[in-house]
Image: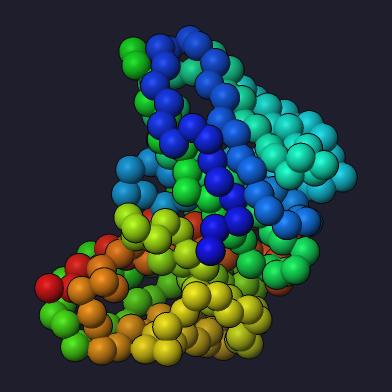
Length: 112
Length: 113
């Protein structure tokens, strides 16, 4: 079963705009990670946020975590055509230590 | 390039057959994870090995088995293949036993005809 569910399933924006993706999960977690996958390729780790953190930045990425609402958001600022990919959240649930459970992903398309 | 290698890149086989997928983790990583990605099931965790020992088990079928060797490379064996086993199989590695960043290989695309 999937712990995390991303929203929206697909997002299409113009280059230069910001993209926001959301992830909701069901159980208490140790941390939450965001990964990116270009079509048919392996996943690339973007950022990890621990359960005691509320916000984290990495370059053009900003991740927030609200453990009370069991949700996270990934913001990509000033998007580029090269950001076109699928984005997945993955949770490391306290009840299933060491297993990452991935959501269904958001397909982001950035139009030039 | 994550540093995780997987072979082969593509595999086409027939139902009922058996295949072996191979993964070499990043240098220094002790954990290896196997995932299956299909259109209908998404990305599913199969199994994890840490320093040669099975550490965690996910949605792995009894027809599937894995092992991690002393040099830390891992193999995933899929037997009695069915059409529904067609998927991308990813290997990932991490330094420790869990709760940390995993580095994914490029995957093996399996097609069962």
